[in-house]
Image 1 (spheres, each protein chain N blue to C red):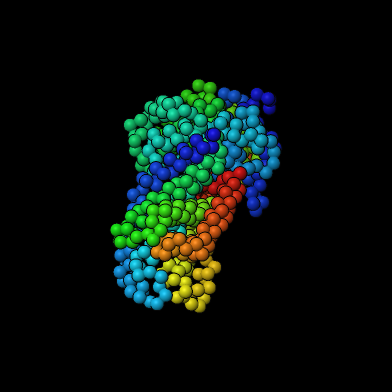
Image 2: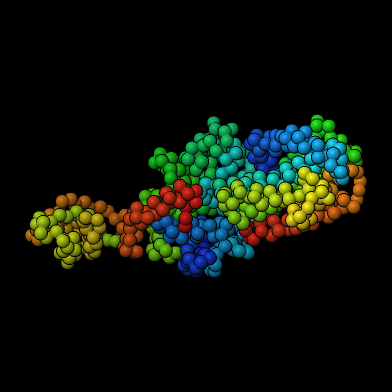
Length: 254
Length: 344
């Protein structure tokens, strides 16, 4: 099918663009390693608090670092798409006699590849810091898939922002939108130990359910009452974001 | 207009949000093999028109057929039939020149082998083979224009659309591109270009349409349009011999010479007059005498053949040059500084 071939060409081009910018590749890896160094040892004492689900704070942090890296990668994708729009290259792609959805799909597939690469590196760093999975190899595979799909979902937000605003200023500051999604969560402390408005905000943030699901797989095992809400939240979020991004893209390019 | 037209535009209207009528019901047609130009100042509606032809922009109403295909019903066939080099050169700066063209070839349906061979042929043709491994972002302005141009030709389209192809280029690069475009047209490629450069339209186009404020005000070959003016154009700079009579001197001079039988039209331009005349050899001595008798000196006189700017002046009452110096270029410079690109 032509669209598959065209998507592949766009995918290869976007992948090459990403890999040709070493800092774009290295930066998320460095930031993940730094987070283990900055938060891991100094906050390790938190595990002594009654009710804390594990005595390995690095294992607790791994889910947070995964989800946060994936969330902020949405902001990166926004800049990638915006650069093409502002340079006029996006118009050049629209001029080609191709199915225009191949441009969107090629971009999303690269977002998935980036997410996959980053997840693998973060998990490797986590293991260097002594983190082990309660759920074994199957748990590792599940976390890799979950985080990769989540990364594609946040890429949709980036694509929507770039297409709708076409503004460098707005897109560069889109991390302001991603920040509450990543931080108003139980990233540093289990929800049971939170209180007040923050606890309410965490409860309505779908990202927290994904975070809890991933963390449960890492530190507690196959406890489905915590994992399933995460999978549902991931499925719902990704579906809604994919449909919205496709709709916005179609309106912009029709 | 006939069924053989490669471009057919009928009553094309484009109204932007906010009510701006960028294109206000224009008609024109281009025959296969023609070199056709849309000439006009910034904001005339040129880029809007060419973007509609390319399927990048939706029209408000009207009929547009390109290479025999309706742009709304069969946009994919239109895109296969055209190459479009846009005003803002849309390149992939992080890609090498060769990779950039290779992807263009693949997206236009060439096989990998065909694309490879075509890319090398085009790189050689425009003298970029030696820099093909360099990233496009490192190319000079002229090199960027050239690679953008050949990217539009990768699939050998019968129709090439060019939006101000030499704007911003140095004279040497501009001449090289003009030569290449003329060569392409000789090879049978139909070319439709937009330009605000009269010299470009005059030198390249066999037929032009002058567009202003969304309307086509004149159409024909450059020579025929200039012939419509009739005869020569005299530019005369004047000064009063009597300082007390300086006020209203230009208007007086215009009135004096405007009534002479050999003057078809007299307009004030700057500190002088522009006169259209059928017989400049008889006009000049008489002009000097009449002005002198009325205490006005002709400090300089030049006689020119009509230009396309004179044609624009005739049909709109304004000059393209004056439009560009009074607002167009400074507006463009400010927009460029703000990173906003060119406005149409």
